[in-house]
Image (cartoon, rainbow, N blue to C red; front, side):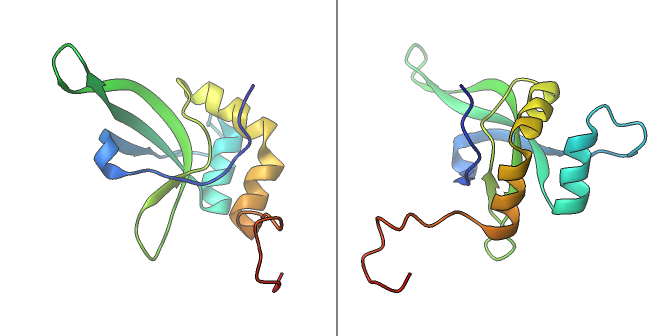
Amino acid sequence: MQQPPHKRLLDPDELFASREIRFQDRRESQYPLLMRLCSDFNFSVLQLQRKLFSHLSRKHVPGALEFVLATRDDTSQLWHSVSPGVATLKALDEYAKDYEVDLLHLQLFGEDIDVTQVNDGYY
């Protein structure tokens, strides 16, 4: 089962490498939903390679490549993933189709506040 979208900080210290995937031509894109989310709603598609600790070599080694849908915080310049890491752009496009409304709600309105945890009475 897939996880619904929520923001998670992408810690640069946990990554070997990352790059932003750019979609060039709207008419020729194989992933029109990802292109629309990126161009119209300020999302980005990142390809990541996380660090994994190897108990054999006792050091960090590169993990498998993965793709995430992410947003960038303008004030801190840090990236936040809003999707789980998936192996292919096709799988990320399918995730975006399944959770399009939730992704747009998260981008436009932010995270929902859990009222059971608010104890100051202002909400």
